[in-house]
Image (cartoon, rainbow, N blue to C red; front, side):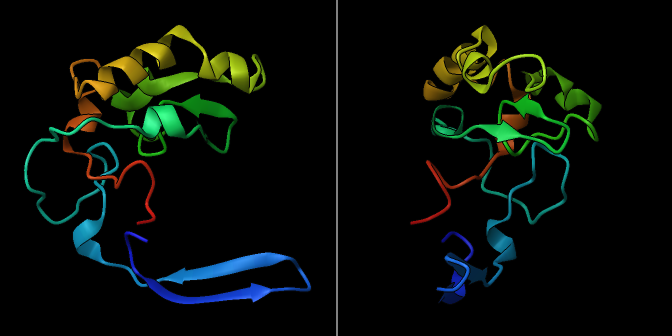
Amino acid sequence: MRQGLAARWEDEAAGVLVEVISPSVATYNDRGGTAAVPAQAGPRTQPCAMTATSLSVDYRGIVKMCCNVIPDSAPEHERYAVGSAADATLAELWDSEAMTTWRARHAAADWSASPACRTCVQALPETRR
């Protein structure tokens, strides 16, 4: 895990695996510029696969481009809301023109339409190594 695994156990009765992380602030993400974290190396130059490998739905049912954008608390992130799961299926939102465009741009490391991604340090394609 990007954070470092501190403990892990399986609760056989409940059928769940519990993992506790050991935080490493140096690897924290700035959540699209909404969180203050230690200075990072500079602008992102590597492609991002988050929009191609994960779907993010917030507590209101809004599908977002990525889990690192927060449209309800950062007005500049409203552009990253794809739509509501109450109004369309997840498959329709996943296959939407907006998501398709973001996937293509992020695969080419083009942050022109998603400036919040310029400083992202999310480990890709997921946080586990």
